[in-house]
Image 1 (spheres, rainbow, N blue to C red):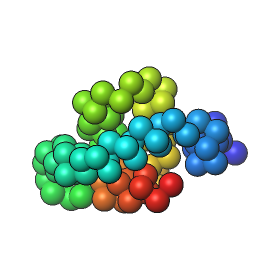
Image 2: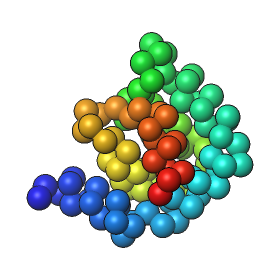
Image 3: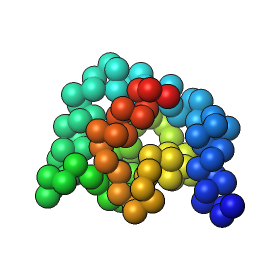
Image 4: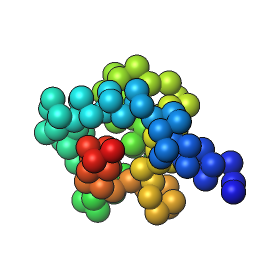
Length: 98
């Protein structure tokens, strides 16, 4: 298992994720439209996906108090295909269903 897959596995099992997911769930549930708007603004070509840089900038804009390491862990977890992009609706659904 690679270091990235081990990290993602730990994140998925909740080793790192408890507080991160709670912060995101609270934010999304409190104002889901706002986060959707941020994703749509970042998705300039309307593919429904955003790059890792765009994703990380959005998470930073939310002011959730996450460290760079936590944001990277979160990205690795939600980059389901491993292509360096996040499907923003899959991201929101995955967080809310966690």
